[in-house]
Length: 201
Image (tube, rainbow, N blue to C red; front, side, top):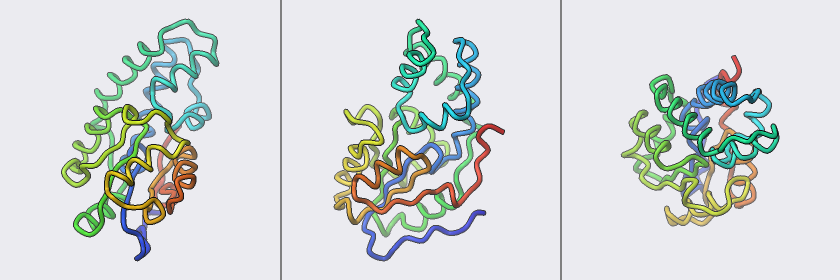
């Protein structure tokens, strides 16, 4: 399934989501959410995971708490989940067609990341994939007041690299992120057509 991603010659800037786009990290996130969910009395299904993909962790856990009528602290769920995820980050691999694209355009087009994750985790992922020195511009959960599917994340990323939204190409794997890119008026590429992930397997 892996093949080269083509960038239109009129594109002047590239913006990447991280989890599920640059890194095939969604299977690990799902497994950790499942495991922590059981600890907190929640059946964290694949359908629930995909529905909430792209929403910051604390907001995600608040939604889960409310939906299941639990009384635990969402921040505690997040703390346990993030610790478990970071302990297993060595299992995360890069999405090869996207990694290749980043290296191809490293000195040609300005690039940024726009993620619903926090800056600490996002930086850890990029560093693990040896990309932190290639993509210095990053908009994370703590940098915006409105998260995906609101376009604020990608609009701020475009501003960081000095490119108008209509001239940016966004790379995403999640429905909320794709909606955000479209709402921002950017060219959007769904990277799931370029690789096969293993969420729920």
